[in-house]
Figure 1 (cartoon, one colour):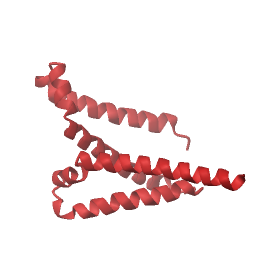
Figure 2 (figure 1 turned 180 degrees about the vertical axis):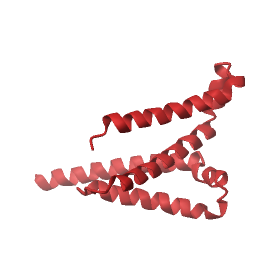
Figure 3 (figure 1 turned 135 degrees about the vertical axis):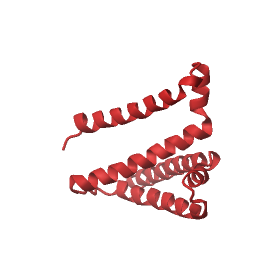
Figure 4 (figure 1 turned 90 degrees about the vertical axis):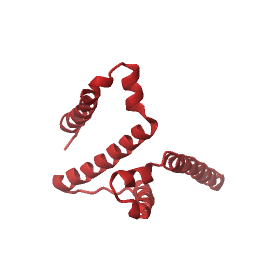
Length: 141
């Protein structure tokens, strides 16, 4: 009975992983995130590197997730690692926002076309402020 239970858990885990992975790949592919990021950063000739890095990152962090690996790094390395993760998430969110045209549609619906620069600055400052508040007030060092 224990073997059947374990095999069922493996099957459910694989099915969930395939579903989430397929959704991630569809998200990246349909919205042309990687080519647009390469275009914005003027690195169109290195698109294959973006694809390899995304794939290796997913595999590496999936492997890390299955391990009980705890890294005790100095705060400087943690800050550098966190900064790079924040840059990646921010660029991915910016690319998604640009592809979906969220900002122009929102500005038009709120009748804020002439205040667009203030709208963008407020969004950026809000994100930075929220990140700093979370970092300094809610992190246990």
